[in-house]
Image 1 (tube, helix red, strand yellow):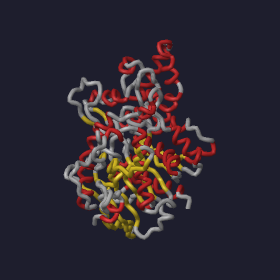
Image 2 (cartoon, one colour; image 1 turned 60 degrees about the vertical axis):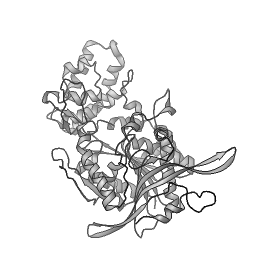
Image 3 (cartoon, helix red, strand yellow; image 1 turned 30 degrees about the vertical axis):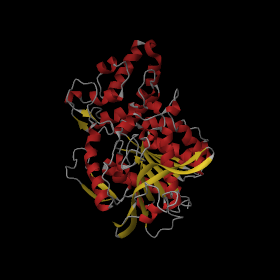
Image 4 (cartoon, one colour; image 1 turned 90 degrees about the horizontal axis):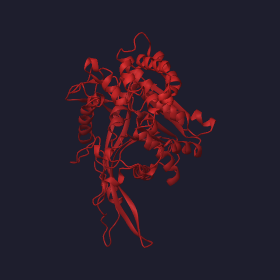
Length: 496
């Protein structure tokens, strides 16, 4: 049923009338039951758009609240739970420009899509199933779609592009969190953030922003496929760091496809990590000064670890760019490998092309998730909107603004460290997939090792690894293990 009363009360009144100024919230609530190990989990789903309003001051005089954006969310709250003791997790994906569809229907929500995995992808039409590993067992969950993703849009007369940037994104998502917390009486609840990919950038920034702007201290932040320092990922001229930090992931992917034989994955990773932390960066730093025999040694080691030919590695001057790697690794088999998940393979229209035409790992999941989301919201959660649900807003991603970092590296590692120093109770979970070619785990380790926090706070960070890719929950074994890891993390970090 539509929550008309809340929609009415959240608008501002125009002069001489009791009617709220449009737009207004259009939230819908439904009741559900999930059977888990013979027990029933009763919960309420609230889905729809809430209006973000901005205080307007003209000539030093308050001039009311102006609608700026309508943000779509889906909240799951356990029925008959004590709000003060019940944790709540605010979750979002990344992109930038992505909706929260992936975490919502892949890992955390009470219902999940059945998408299949490598070699056994589900065909259309697709299906959904109850998620026995849902985070709802441990925490209420609020999924947030940033402006221009999902059904979220800028308000009439406002510019969507104003929200397609680092600071404005933090402010708008932070305001959604504040509003939901206040309206639902949850300021005394243990509070968590869960972000994936650029969502980890957002989560780290929000941890500091929520403290500074609202005095909202968190219990924990869950970083899934993290990117906190963009310099570890950006293959730009003069920046050799990504070449070394991607190497262990290249080795893992090559091992998965049988190109590093007679060794376990653990052995390959350990070897690649040692080389990536020692001889390899030393060789790159020498540039044209590197002795010929040293260079030949590095070429041979890289070939043995990555499955690429020595000739190719020599031709690219020891520097293996990631999109080139995904196109080159299985070129002899006329296959490309996935960027988000190197276990997946696909085809190119032209096998002379340097890089893949598409990401086969993204192609594998887009159809199932899109169908499930559009069915689920309209049929099961009874929310109706004729707008297209923007799974990923490509224009927003292409035009994302990092003007705050002009002339310097894009990083939120400093903000995460600040949040931890200010709130020493803040716990951090970091989950990485060994076959993730977008946010490699070794780059995350590099960033975490350099966080500016006192030694005693390093124990607040826990790292977990899974034999899968960027969305590690596509792999069923990883999904089940990660869900349990997140549940344990929340239970331990709730401080109750």
